[in-house]
Length: 319
Image 1 (cartoon, rainbow, N blue to C red):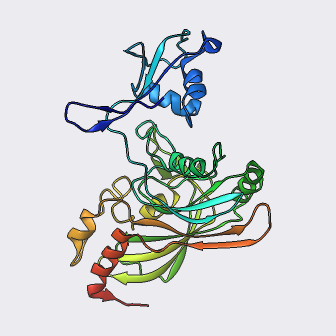
Image 2: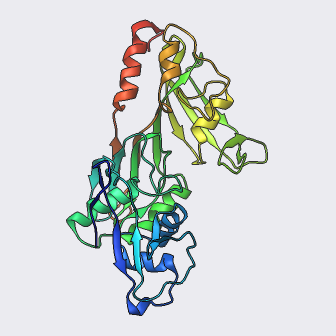
């Protein structure tokens, strides 16, 4: 059951409370949560336990394997209930749903973002229309990257779509604002990428995995360049790593842009941009069940569009 409460500040908070049924007596806590809490998978349950959001008979439990007993009272969550993230449905049929993700929203649960992710929001959206609807995750974009994401809504679509991703049969275009003025009209960054540390940072290295990114200059500004990019491979952080490697990191990229100082008339605006200025703007692929050719586009989000308008005050070499 869902038990809305009020905390001392008067803000609305939430928790899910239930008693362990007899048929789950002695079962692991994470498995019980996945069985008793609607839309909670075991992986999400384990993250909630690790985050300290699960209580058994009023005691916080952080061990997913802890067996629970019939009749014990389990509570999940406390504090302000996160608002479900907004997203725009671009396409939807019985097999697929394509959505436009805003920046700042993780695609799937992580240790730091176990609630309020896009996957759970899409599941809620689908289940509100048909209880028990299936939603499968195909691919991810970074939390602070905006743009198009595909989910499957029929398990029959999983294998052909996964194969298409693996064989690089999907067309994926990104728009990025990068620091500095790139002189060449187009280019290719063909450098392997390897995991650099336990925190997930990547770097270019000869022993890494094949990674190829194509780019084309859309417009040059003073101190920045607007690029469109096509991915031939899909390595984690690929665009950000490759652009940093060639000396033109994505505007606002705090992870891979260190050491490159914005210049020009709008240097302060470039330095103050709140996230990496990277947007998944186009997808093209063959429908996994019907074979129809599909093509989708997403316009620049408001924050990037406003930055472009500011940079256009003084354009260098417009195309």
